Image (cartoon, rainbow, N blue to C red; front, side, top):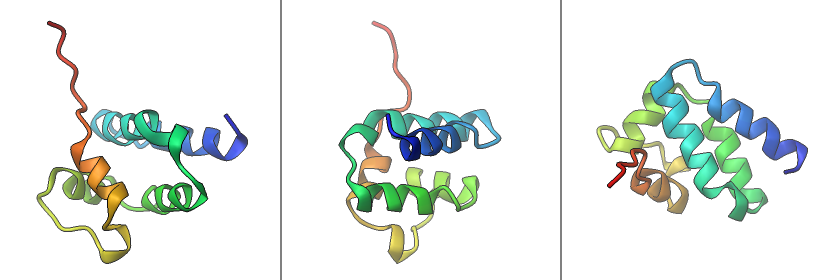
Length: 86
């Protein structure tokens, strides 16, 4: 993992609340290996937003700003954050 991805991973997993860590960090873990530079930039910009806003956009209780709408936000909204052992 290159230096920029390591920094993004750290910021994704150290948000300040366990819930935000799991959601944002889990999204990073699930998708970072396929991101191009534009997607990395999108995620970096997202990390500057407040956790409550990101979480509201992800669960659909609030609409994200236009700059965050698109395939990356769609993927964040679809991510299954809870794994149940069967």
